[in-house]
Length: 443
Ligand code: ADP
Ligand code: ASP
Ligand code: MG
Image (cartoon, helix red, strand yellow):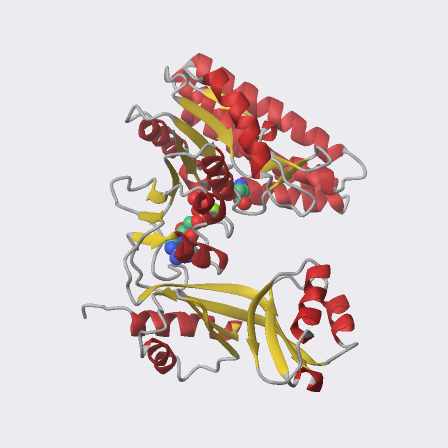
């Protein structure tokens, strides 16, 4: 069995949704099809929720009306038959009725907000299942809320998904196409929750890991993982092969094509992940698997919104236990540390979640001196084959970026990652410089 996930732009227009029907039925492979919300929907739902939280009900209703008109137009273009059109109108009517009643709840808190945001995937999957039915394609719509769950740390409970799917899937053993929602799940209180923005990729990989799928395919609007961020750099190219480790680094450090955690469950069970372009299905895309080729430089990604902390202590001189004390504080506040560099009496580190920064600083200052943090930093992650026996690669990177101020460098943490910390203002310049300097261009 394979798991195929289609993102927002891949389902965002009626003709795209139609072409997905063609794609998933072109072979006889049994598939679980995971869908995102139509592009723009999650943003619109979040905006409505913000307005409802501020009790701006009229403004929220105006957004609902605009989104409803969008879906009505979508339905009238998607379906061919009177029965299909009626079914589409019924789905949209019921969903928007529910959205209206949710927005009317007072107080409107985070529980309502999460339920509201989930309606995007609930809408897209129902509309798609109805389209398949209209086209005579047999399928079943499985509610993700029955098998996707997160724990108190907002981490997916893979064992739960595994057990639930082992129970549910045999009940549909005769179905070739199984449709479900990406992104949405339940939390330990049984409420509707989600896997954070872009989370449908993660759903696909969690399902793939849980059922030990033959392959997970992520269908999007670009022909695979590119060597650099195409939103920032003019000329980029798709990479045919990546290892799980390389892809995980790129996703975690900002390659938006994949949710940061996507690779983890697939790697855990050795399930290959293929990235494909819905708009150009014959393009090779990217295959992410255990083994790959060992190019010196493979790809670059960048993660914004980073805060750098500088910690000094003369007690660190020849001491042990100091780093443990520092890291215990980050653990206490559930704040992951991304980059770390050390000198004899100081340590610099970066975090991307500054929610608890005030408390973290207060506790650190009890046993060390802190310099003023640097805010608005960007981690630039270079992925390649940096085997310690290969000389010159570090020098090549530093030569290419020698005109750009670098705040931190991390090298040797793994054989395939080198990270540089720069101010966000330098991001475009450094990504372009690395692009020109580290890859072969025939001009
Ligand atoms: P979907 O809606 O299908 O989940 P996303 O918008 O989340 O799609 O991800 C696809 C987008 O990721 C691309 O359109 C591209 O602009 C962006 N992107 C950023 N970095 C990369 C990269 N290294 N390779 C490919 N795409 C990237
Ligand atoms: N619809 C969700 C989002 O926009 C999840 C996804 O698209 O992957 O973030
Ligand atoms: Mg995405």
